View 1 (cartoon, rainbow, N blue to C red):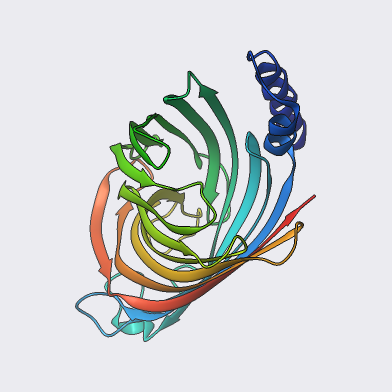
View 2: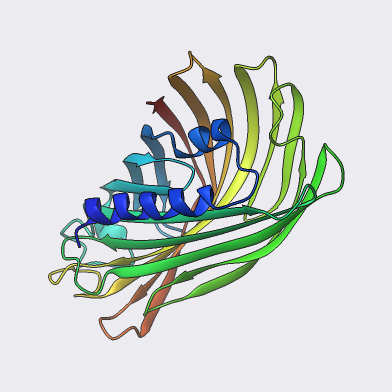
Length: 294
């Protein structure tokens, strides 16, 4: 089954499952299944590899089509290196890595137990690679229970895990939300792996301040000078300050200033044996995202 067929099969499955829930309103169902298309582009300025004079800047572009239940996306990273001869990895002559790619599909299963309890489980499958996709596949699981203390305050508890044959990460999800779905005044989500503060000047304009943790494992090419047919595990802590603006009922625009607080990566050989850890110093950047709702 190819990716497109899988995407629509998941849509049909979850549409049917949601219809079976008691009391489901048509207007809510329509909102859940309406498709969205988004394009996102970001750039992080040059930062040195810690302890040496060689450095790298990164451009990232992604496209995604999704609704509240299923989604599919493609992401490309382009790397621009400086002072290659000073880097503590590679051969000192050739560019260590030019581009990376990621393809991801995800499925969200929301379920409202009652007025107080809400459950969400999200599954994903991905392939993240330099050139060849062989042995590049991974999976993710995100699951939590949300309890509404009152109309403004909720708490969430759960876990998320990123599985890859080379390296698997599992961490708790703990957060507190204040008016997170309201479209006026202050709102907040405080916890891990994501936190943010927001303020709605009006229903269309939102100011945001936040931080996010992410992790992924990337398959290197058969000719990689870093580790032939090996892997890189990347971990990132990113802070942002930005604005979200609903241009009209179809278009939403998001812009952000970025600050990479901490970036680490670990090299593995083809057999999954850890070779060495590296850190990249903090840097500034920017991000823009445009969403179109069909």
